[in-house]
Length: 113
Image (cartoon, rainbow, N blue to C red; front, side):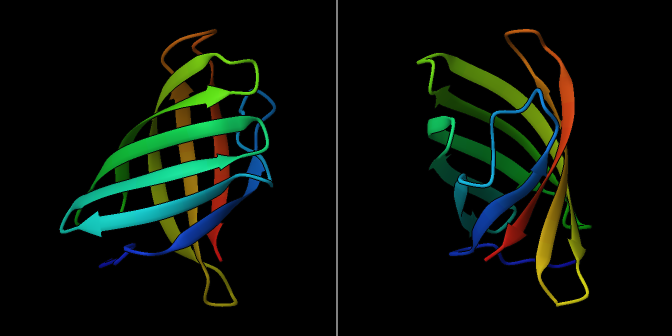
């Protein structure tokens, strides 16, 4: 799947309870070739960044960090798999894990706005 994420905006539509991204979190994506990055904020996230490498199938291998509303820096890694919903919107289904804190894992989805 060939994707161009440059300039796309995403919003969270689901997350497991151990995640900090919620429906008020907005992601602003950029892309140059296989390199992808984004800024995100909103809800429990004060300021966050992610960097990713896009695989040939459109899957993103990423690392992220953010400052949460408790003023802690959180670190994680994620595999984001693209799917197109029935309305033609791009959704990323995300398997993620914290690299600090309790180091738990979770599942989230973000949708193109």
